[in-house]
Image (cartoon, rainbow, N blue to C red; front, top):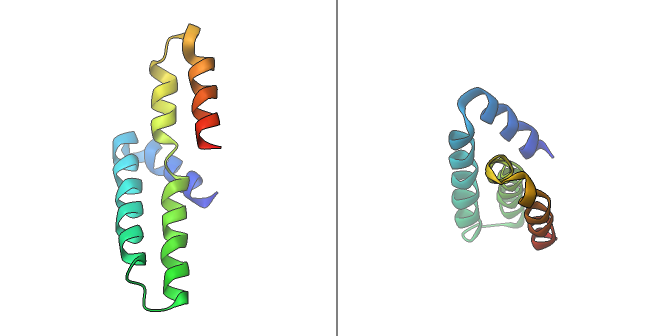
Length: 85
């Protein structure tokens, strides 16, 4: 997705924390604004922006994978994937 691609570029250039904060900010702001959308076109644009932000939220997953011990990494990450699906 475009959000994941762009989020990765931002994380590489400015750091994971900045990428995470930007994605969470985008999701929060556009999600809140979509509650007040005056028409369908605006709602769809704002919800698309929410999806763009969600696409960039791979940062916490990467951080978790980095800090888990090798013996638990596979089980925990697979469990996390089952949670999202």
